[in-house]
Image (cartoon, rainbow, N blue to C red; front, side):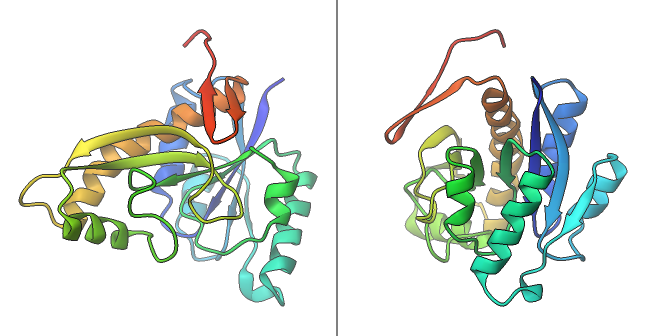
Length: 212
């Protein structure tokens, strides 16, 4: 049975677009993006969803008295929509443990570094690439992982690296990692999940054999 995917967004939605494009090419096997849920009505990602004919919803943190109340409303919406997989694609709102209890090993996130480097509290957006350049690493990249209550600490599904070049700025490195890593890794991880080819064993995620 085809798995229903919800993508959670807060901003421009470049990773959402990568998923939409991959779906159009038939690269998300046994899965379909059936909802885009934004944390703000101004998120441009909602326009991307509309153009692709995907229903969009808004759950603004400011409409709820606490992060927990918002999370419970989110879980209710996901259940109401029959969602099987939740993808965090630049979702900047804090959610509480109820989401991960309801969707254990079924919430995935993309992070723009090779975890465990440059991750955790305060490491998001350009900050990640600023830290990588300041540290002087020769490789950086992206990580797709299952989300748990501990920030950026869930089991790693896929990783891909790129070279850090001598003249890189945070913006240039960010663009290279998006184009060469994020936009390729995320659709692949989503497709593997939808094919039931990801097996979590403690901290390790095994990718099971199957037709590509």
